[in-house]
Image (cartoon, rainbow over the protein chains, first blue to last red):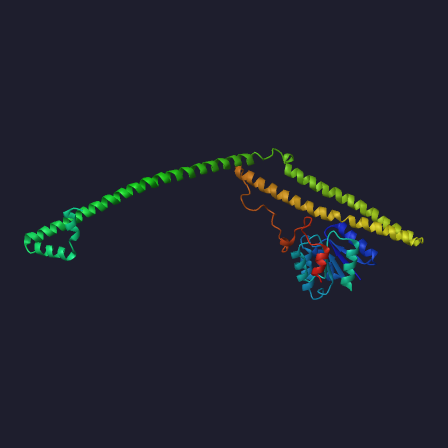
Length: 120
Length: 239
Protein backbone atom coordinates (compact mmCIF):
# COMPACT_ATOMS: atom_id res chain seq x y z
CA UNK A 1 0.00 0.00 0.00
CA UNK A 2 1.28 3.41 -0.97
CA UNK A 3 1.24 6.16 1.68
CA UNK A 4 1.49 9.90 1.02
CA UNK A 5 3.17 12.01 3.74
CA UNK A 6 2.38 15.75 3.40
CA UNK A 7 4.32 18.29 5.47
CA UNK A 8 6.09 21.53 4.60
CA UNK A 9 8.82 20.62 7.09
CA UNK A 10 11.22 18.11 5.52
CA UNK A 11 12.48 16.83 8.89
CA UNK A 12 8.94 15.89 9.90
CA UNK A 13 8.40 14.01 6.62
CA UNK A 14 11.65 12.17 7.26
CA UNK A 15 10.60 11.23 10.81
CA UNK A 16 7.21 9.93 9.69
CA UNK A 17 8.80 8.05 6.79
CA UNK A 18 11.20 6.33 9.23
CA UNK A 19 8.37 5.38 11.57
CA UNK A 20 6.36 3.97 8.68
CA UNK A 21 9.40 2.01 7.58
CA UNK A 22 9.68 0.46 11.05
CA UNK A 23 6.12 -0.84 10.86
CA UNK A 24 6.60 -2.26 7.42
CA UNK A 25 5.35 0.52 5.17
CA UNK A 26 8.17 1.10 2.75
CA UNK A 27 6.18 2.49 -0.18
CA UNK A 28 6.02 6.10 0.94
CA UNK A 29 5.90 9.31 -1.10
CA UNK A 30 6.27 12.86 0.19
CA UNK A 31 4.73 16.24 -0.67
CA UNK A 32 5.67 19.66 0.71
CA UNK A 33 2.22 21.28 0.46
CA UNK A 34 -1.42 20.62 -0.34
CA UNK A 35 -1.23 21.48 -4.04
CA UNK A 36 1.63 19.06 -4.74
CA UNK A 37 -0.15 16.42 -2.65
CA UNK A 38 -3.39 16.82 -4.63
CA UNK A 39 -1.49 16.43 -7.91
CA UNK A 40 0.14 13.21 -6.65
CA UNK A 41 -3.19 11.88 -5.39
CA UNK A 42 -4.80 12.45 -8.81
CA UNK A 43 -1.88 10.78 -10.61
CA UNK A 44 -1.35 7.76 -8.33
CA UNK A 45 -3.56 5.69 -6.08
CA UNK A 46 -2.66 6.01 -2.39
CA UNK A 47 -4.01 3.89 0.45
CA UNK A 48 -3.44 6.54 3.13
CA UNK A 49 -2.68 10.25 3.46
CA UNK A 50 -0.84 11.55 6.54
CA UNK A 51 -0.92 15.34 6.39
CA UNK A 52 0.15 18.38 8.35
CA UNK A 53 -2.39 21.23 8.60
CA UNK A 54 -0.45 24.52 8.53
CA UNK A 55 1.08 24.70 5.06
CA UNK A 56 1.16 27.24 2.28
CA UNK A 57 -0.40 27.90 -0.14
CA UNK A 58 -2.87 25.04 0.39
CA UNK A 59 -3.41 23.89 3.98
CA UNK A 60 -4.04 20.34 5.13
CA UNK A 61 -7.70 21.16 5.80
CA UNK A 62 -8.14 22.46 2.26
CA UNK A 63 -6.44 19.33 0.94
CA UNK A 64 -8.80 17.17 2.99
CA UNK A 65 -11.84 19.02 1.61
CA UNK A 66 -10.54 18.65 -1.95
CA UNK A 67 -10.01 14.93 -1.40
CA UNK A 68 -13.47 14.42 0.06
CA UNK A 69 -15.06 16.44 -2.77
CA UNK A 70 -13.36 14.35 -5.47
CA UNK A 71 -15.34 11.24 -6.38
CA UNK A 72 -12.21 9.23 -7.19
CA UNK A 73 -10.37 10.22 -4.00
CA UNK A 74 -13.17 10.66 -1.48
CA UNK A 75 -12.66 7.24 0.13
CA UNK A 76 -8.95 7.71 0.82
CA UNK A 77 -8.14 7.40 4.55
CA UNK A 78 -6.78 10.69 5.87
CA UNK A 79 -4.90 11.34 9.13
CA UNK A 80 -4.15 14.90 10.21
CA UNK A 81 -0.87 15.33 12.14
CA UNK A 82 -0.64 18.88 13.43
CA UNK A 83 0.32 21.24 16.25
CA UNK A 84 -3.18 22.81 16.04
CA UNK A 85 -4.75 21.38 19.17
CA UNK A 86 -7.79 23.56 19.82
CA UNK A 87 -11.20 21.94 19.94
CA UNK A 88 -12.39 24.11 17.03
CA UNK A 89 -9.58 22.68 14.90
CA UNK A 90 -10.43 19.08 15.71
CA UNK A 91 -14.14 19.74 15.11
CA UNK A 92 -13.42 21.45 11.77
CA UNK A 93 -11.23 18.56 10.64
CA UNK A 94 -13.80 16.01 11.75
CA UNK A 95 -16.59 17.84 9.93
CA UNK A 96 -14.42 17.86 6.80
CA UNK A 97 -14.13 14.08 7.03
CA UNK A 98 -10.77 13.35 8.65
CA UNK A 99 -10.34 9.73 9.82
CA UNK A 100 -8.04 10.51 12.73
CA UNK A 101 -6.17 13.39 14.29
CA UNK A 102 -2.73 13.38 15.91
CA UNK A 103 -1.47 16.37 17.84
CA UNK A 104 2.23 17.26 17.70
CA UNK A 105 4.49 16.48 19.41
CA UNK A 106 3.51 12.82 19.26
CA UNK A 107 5.32 9.57 19.93
CA UNK A 108 5.93 6.63 17.66
CA UNK A 109 3.32 4.45 19.36
CA UNK A 110 0.56 7.05 18.80
CA UNK A 111 1.30 7.21 15.07
CA UNK A 112 1.41 3.43 14.81
CA UNK A 113 -1.88 3.06 16.73
CA UNK A 114 -3.70 5.64 14.60
CA UNK A 115 -2.50 4.10 11.36
CA UNK A 116 -3.61 0.66 12.54
CA UNK A 117 -6.96 2.11 13.62
CA UNK A 118 -7.60 3.86 10.31
CA UNK A 119 -6.49 0.98 8.12
CA UNK A 120 -8.44 -1.49 10.25
CA UNK B 1 -57.45 91.62 61.57
CA UNK B 2 -58.61 95.24 60.88
CA UNK B 3 -62.25 96.26 60.14
CA UNK B 4 -61.28 97.10 56.59
CA UNK B 5 -59.66 93.75 55.94
CA UNK B 6 -62.62 92.04 57.65
CA UNK B 7 -64.98 93.78 55.27
CA UNK B 8 -62.87 92.78 52.22
CA UNK B 9 -62.78 89.22 53.42
CA UNK B 10 -66.56 89.17 53.93
CA UNK B 11 -67.28 90.44 50.39
CA UNK B 12 -68.82 87.55 48.56
CA UNK B 13 -69.08 87.12 44.82
CA UNK B 14 -72.78 87.93 44.92
CA UNK B 15 -72.22 91.10 46.91
CA UNK B 16 -69.39 92.12 44.54
CA UNK B 17 -71.72 91.69 41.58
CA UNK B 18 -74.47 93.70 43.34
CA UNK B 19 -72.11 96.63 44.04
CA UNK B 20 -70.74 96.52 40.48
CA UNK B 21 -74.28 96.46 39.20
CA UNK B 22 -75.22 99.48 41.34
CA UNK B 23 -72.20 101.47 40.23
CA UNK B 24 -72.79 100.49 36.63
CA UNK B 25 -76.23 101.97 36.55
CA UNK B 26 -74.79 105.34 35.47
CA UNK B 27 -72.44 106.19 32.58
CA UNK B 28 -69.95 107.66 35.01
CA UNK B 29 -70.13 104.55 37.18
CA UNK B 30 -69.48 102.25 34.15
CA UNK B 31 -66.51 104.48 33.15
CA UNK B 32 -65.21 104.09 36.70
CA UNK B 33 -65.44 100.31 36.51
CA UNK B 34 -63.60 100.19 33.13
CA UNK B 35 -60.82 102.43 34.46
CA UNK B 36 -60.53 100.25 37.57
CA UNK B 37 -60.25 97.07 35.49
CA UNK B 38 -57.65 98.64 33.20
CA UNK B 39 -55.48 99.79 36.12
CA UNK B 40 -55.68 96.38 37.78
CA UNK B 41 -54.56 94.63 34.56
CA UNK B 42 -51.62 97.01 34.01
CA UNK B 43 -50.38 96.59 37.56
CA UNK B 44 -50.58 92.76 37.28
CA UNK B 45 -48.74 92.65 33.94
CA UNK B 46 -45.99 94.95 35.16
CA UNK B 47 -45.45 92.79 38.22
CA UNK B 48 -45.21 89.59 36.13
CA UNK B 49 -42.83 91.27 33.67
CA UNK B 50 -40.59 92.46 36.45
CA UNK B 51 -40.57 88.99 37.99
CA UNK B 52 -39.74 87.25 34.68
CA UNK B 53 -37.01 89.77 33.94
CA UNK B 54 -35.44 89.18 37.35
CA UNK B 55 -35.54 85.42 36.93
CA UNK B 56 -33.99 85.69 33.45
CA UNK B 57 -31.09 87.76 34.70
CA UNK B 58 -30.51 85.37 37.56
CA UNK B 59 -30.62 82.34 35.24
CA UNK B 60 -28.27 83.89 32.68
CA UNK B 61 -25.78 84.84 35.34
CA UNK B 62 -25.69 81.36 36.85
CA UNK B 63 -25.56 79.67 33.38
CA UNK B 64 -22.70 81.90 32.25
CA UNK B 65 -20.68 81.09 35.37
CA UNK B 66 -21.19 77.32 34.92
CA UNK B 67 -20.48 77.45 31.17
CA UNK B 68 -17.28 79.39 31.83
CA UNK B 69 -16.14 76.71 34.27
CA UNK B 70 -16.95 73.82 31.89
CA UNK B 71 -15.41 75.51 28.86
CA UNK B 72 -12.23 76.21 30.78
CA UNK B 73 -12.02 72.61 31.93
CA UNK B 74 -12.53 71.21 28.42
CA UNK B 75 -10.00 73.66 26.97
CA UNK B 76 -7.37 72.63 29.52
CA UNK B 77 -8.02 68.94 28.80
CA UNK B 78 -7.74 69.51 25.06
CA UNK B 79 -4.50 71.46 25.50
CA UNK B 80 -3.03 68.63 27.59
CA UNK B 81 -4.10 66.03 25.01
CA UNK B 82 -2.67 68.10 22.21
CA UNK B 83 0.64 68.39 24.07
CA UNK B 84 0.76 64.63 24.69
CA UNK B 85 0.08 63.85 21.01
CA UNK B 86 2.79 66.29 19.95
CA UNK B 87 5.27 64.70 22.35
CA UNK B 88 4.35 61.20 21.14
CA UNK B 89 4.82 62.27 17.51
CA UNK B 90 8.30 63.60 18.31
CA UNK B 91 9.25 60.40 20.16
CA UNK B 92 7.99 58.10 17.40
CA UNK B 93 9.73 60.19 14.74
CA UNK B 94 12.93 59.86 16.78
CA UNK B 95 12.67 56.07 16.53
CA UNK B 96 13.73 56.19 12.86
CA UNK B 97 17.13 54.58 12.62
CA UNK B 98 19.89 56.23 10.63
CA UNK B 99 20.80 52.93 9.00
CA UNK B 100 18.90 49.69 8.54
CA UNK B 101 21.56 47.88 10.59
CA UNK B 102 20.56 49.96 13.61
CA UNK B 103 17.01 48.67 13.50
CA UNK B 104 16.68 46.54 16.60
CA UNK B 105 13.46 44.89 15.51
CA UNK B 106 15.07 43.90 12.21
CA UNK B 107 18.09 42.60 14.09
CA UNK B 108 15.90 40.54 16.46
CA UNK B 109 14.05 39.06 13.48
CA UNK B 110 17.37 38.13 11.89
CA UNK B 111 18.57 36.51 15.11
CA UNK B 112 15.44 34.38 15.34
CA UNK B 113 15.78 33.33 11.69
CA UNK B 114 19.37 32.34 12.44
CA UNK B 115 18.24 30.25 15.43
CA UNK B 116 15.72 28.39 13.24
CA UNK B 117 18.40 27.70 10.60
CA UNK B 118 20.94 26.53 13.17
CA UNK B 119 18.51 24.16 14.91
CA UNK B 120 17.38 22.87 11.50
CA UNK B 121 20.98 21.96 10.61
CA UNK B 122 21.56 20.36 14.01
CA UNK B 123 18.31 18.38 13.75
CA UNK B 124 19.30 17.13 10.32
CA UNK B 125 22.64 15.87 11.65
CA UNK B 126 20.94 14.12 14.60
CA UNK B 127 18.48 12.50 12.19
CA UNK B 128 21.36 11.28 10.02
CA UNK B 129 22.93 9.65 13.06
CA UNK B 130 19.63 8.08 14.13
CA UNK B 131 19.07 6.66 10.66
CA UNK B 132 22.61 5.17 10.66
CA UNK B 133 21.81 3.59 14.03
CA UNK B 134 18.66 2.05 12.55
CA UNK B 135 20.69 0.62 9.67
CA UNK B 136 23.24 -0.82 12.10
CA UNK B 137 20.43 -2.25 14.21
CA UNK B 138 19.40 -4.18 11.11
CA UNK B 139 22.94 -5.54 10.74
CA UNK B 140 23.05 -6.47 14.44
CA UNK B 141 19.74 -8.30 14.04
CA UNK B 142 21.08 -10.17 11.01
CA UNK B 143 24.05 -11.26 13.14
CA UNK B 144 21.65 -13.03 15.46
CA UNK B 145 21.46 -10.42 18.23
CA UNK B 146 17.76 -9.70 17.97
CA UNK B 147 17.25 -8.30 21.48
CA UNK B 148 20.18 -5.93 21.17
CA UNK B 149 18.99 -4.82 17.75
CA UNK B 150 15.49 -4.13 19.11
CA UNK B 151 16.99 -2.05 21.90
CA UNK B 152 19.08 0.01 19.50
CA UNK B 153 16.08 0.49 17.20
CA UNK B 154 13.90 1.66 20.10
CA UNK B 155 16.50 4.21 21.19
CA UNK B 156 17.01 5.42 17.62
CA UNK B 157 13.23 5.86 17.30
CA UNK B 158 13.24 7.94 20.50
CA UNK B 159 15.93 10.14 18.94
CA UNK B 160 13.87 10.47 15.74
CA UNK B 161 10.76 11.52 17.63
CA UNK B 162 12.71 13.95 19.78
CA UNK B 163 13.82 15.67 16.58
CA UNK B 164 10.22 16.73 15.93
CA UNK B 165 10.80 19.45 18.56
CA UNK B 166 12.24 21.53 15.74
CA UNK B 167 8.88 21.59 13.97
CA UNK B 168 7.14 22.94 17.08
CA UNK B 169 9.85 25.45 18.01
CA UNK B 170 10.05 26.49 14.36
CA UNK B 171 6.33 27.26 14.30
CA UNK B 172 6.53 29.20 17.57
CA UNK B 173 9.53 31.17 16.32
CA UNK B 174 7.75 31.94 13.05
CA UNK B 175 4.83 33.37 15.04
CA UNK B 176 7.23 35.65 16.95
CA UNK B 177 9.03 36.67 13.74
CA UNK B 178 5.70 37.51 12.07
CA UNK B 179 4.62 39.54 15.11
CA UNK B 180 7.92 41.45 15.06
CA UNK B 181 7.62 42.11 11.32
CA UNK B 182 4.08 43.39 11.78
CA UNK B 183 5.23 45.65 14.62
CA UNK B 184 8.09 46.91 12.49
CA UNK B 185 5.77 47.71 9.59
CA UNK B 186 3.36 49.61 11.83
CA UNK B 187 6.11 51.62 13.55
CA UNK B 188 7.64 52.46 10.15
CA UNK B 189 4.20 53.48 8.87
CA UNK B 190 3.73 55.85 11.83
CA UNK B 191 7.23 57.26 11.46
CA UNK B 192 6.70 57.95 7.77
CA UNK B 193 3.29 59.44 8.41
CA UNK B 194 4.43 61.81 11.14
CA UNK B 195 7.86 62.58 9.87
CA UNK B 196 6.24 63.96 6.71
CA UNK B 197 8.01 61.44 4.55
CA UNK B 198 6.62 61.28 1.01
CA UNK B 199 5.09 58.02 -0.12
CA UNK B 200 4.15 56.89 3.38
CA UNK B 201 1.90 53.89 3.56
CA UNK B 202 -0.84 55.74 5.46
CA UNK B 203 -3.19 54.19 7.97
CA UNK B 204 -4.17 51.07 6.05
CA UNK B 205 -3.04 47.56 6.91
CA UNK B 206 0.57 46.73 6.01
CA UNK B 207 1.07 44.86 2.76
CA UNK B 208 1.07 41.11 3.12
CA UNK B 209 -0.37 41.12 6.63
CA UNK B 210 -3.61 39.35 5.69
CA UNK B 211 -3.45 35.57 5.34
CA UNK B 212 -5.42 34.64 2.20
CA UNK B 213 -5.96 31.01 3.23
CA UNK B 214 -9.66 30.27 3.88
CA UNK B 215 -8.91 28.52 7.18
CA UNK B 216 -6.46 31.21 8.37
CA UNK B 217 -8.67 31.83 11.43
CA UNK B 218 -7.92 28.26 12.55
CA UNK B 219 -4.14 28.50 12.12
CA UNK B 220 -2.97 29.32 15.63
CA UNK B 221 0.11 27.13 15.75
CA UNK B 222 1.19 25.21 18.85
CA UNK B 223 -0.94 26.14 21.85
CA UNK B 224 0.74 27.56 24.97
CA UNK B 225 1.27 24.93 27.70
CA UNK B 226 -2.02 23.88 29.28
CA UNK B 227 -4.22 25.57 26.68
CA UNK B 228 -4.48 23.07 23.85
CA UNK B 229 -6.27 19.70 23.79
CA UNK B 230 -4.28 16.61 24.70
CA UNK B 231 -4.15 13.56 22.43
CA UNK B 232 -6.50 11.71 24.80
CA UNK B 233 -9.00 14.61 24.64
CA UNK B 234 -8.85 14.44 20.85
CA UNK B 235 -9.23 10.67 20.87
CA UNK B 236 -12.38 11.12 22.97
CA UNK B 237 -13.82 13.42 20.27
CA UNK B 238 -13.34 10.63 17.75
CA UNK B 239 -15.16 8.16 20.00
